[in-house]
Length: 580
Image 1 (cartoon, rainbow, N blue to C red):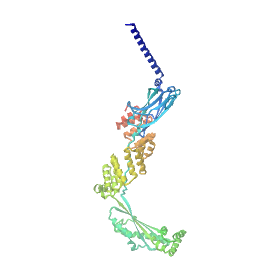
Image 2 (cartoon, one colour):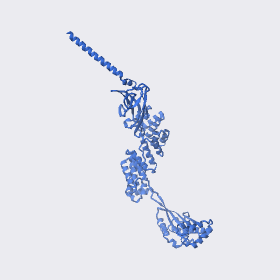
Image 3 (tube, rainbow, N blue to C red):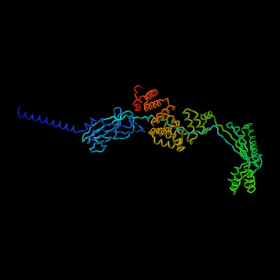
Image 4 (cartoon, rainbow, N blue to C red):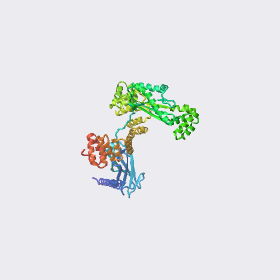
């Protein structure tokens, strides 16, 4: 080979070698000057504290605070670091959050300044809507470093477990309210009349027995005596004398007037065989002279000097002297003699009767055969006599047919639809009821229930506020919304009238575990799967692992699906559930 070719070849080999050496030196120099590599090696020294941990859902929202601590001599003065939190479940990222930027002392960027020599702290507070995929998983944080044009993933840390969703154990056990009937099987009736007398006389004049009120009394006795639905209870007679007579005479006179009036009515009662011979039926009372009646009639009169006359008469404490003065006044003032005194000489007669309504059997028979004969109160009462929901519904619908303007029929129809889980039908019935009695508190409560079930808690609470005073049911229903909104203390207060599992749940969430145990024990549902599951949660929160396992096993026996729930429930994150 010619020498020239050999020399050129050797020269090319040395040139390539020089290029490779220079490139390697440049690369080494750059790597040695990039602080991200060193930070990546030491990134595990960055610590995180998350509050709360595990994460908690309240009011459909997860709120948390990340407190981070940077160790000394870790954070290069010219580096920028982005803290990127994200939620990971089953190996997949289900939610990423806005990053927080940390900057070195000499970095040209906005963010939390971190001192190189001393290290530093940062805090990141945020919240986000809970999603079902976040029940069991981890909150993680990426540290991404940035130096000049270089970027590097420094470290990914698991910072918290998630998510506690115990508030979602709230049950939809809202309490609707019926429009109550006013049915009374026995109603009391009183028929009043009056007999007037001549001065100093107790004789009943035939003209008095012919007055309209006495004729009406006798007609009532005749008609009701043949009506088996009526029971005659008592004849009450209160008799008076006018205060212008002698005191002793007036007392005897009043007694005699009571007897004469009683005898006048007694003859009619015996004629129609009403309480014949039962002296206890008659309550005859002589009330003496009627001074109070005299004053009342004087005050109501047009007598010019009436106030002066009353003041003068009231000056006499001695009834005898007062009687004499009244006599004198009656001679001076003819109005007193002719208008005031005569009506005071009387017997007031009250006939008390009980009207006995249809029996339960008669009411139910009428409901089936001819509901038109029943009053609205009887119709509403009839629905309470059966436990069959379809029969109740039929009765309320018959009530609507015969009494369409009464809101209770419509409301109670909706009540039954609600219990049958026919929410759309129930809502329409409640709207119909509201059209008959707008903003009625009972209807507002029931509208609040169907509105909440449709997912609008805010409007439901507005309805409940309008329902104030309708009953403890309203407060209980508000308590359910309180739980869903994360207001557990208010829920406990609102639900306190009922021993339910929802109250127990509110107490657990409010940190009242002992009270919750007592509530569960008193609940009608104390042997349900939900009750045992709540007791297991109490065990977990109080560090009683035996209580956790015993109650979880009972809960799963009653509802096998709760095993899957328990295995991913962070309430039991510190419990060994392998034996379930």
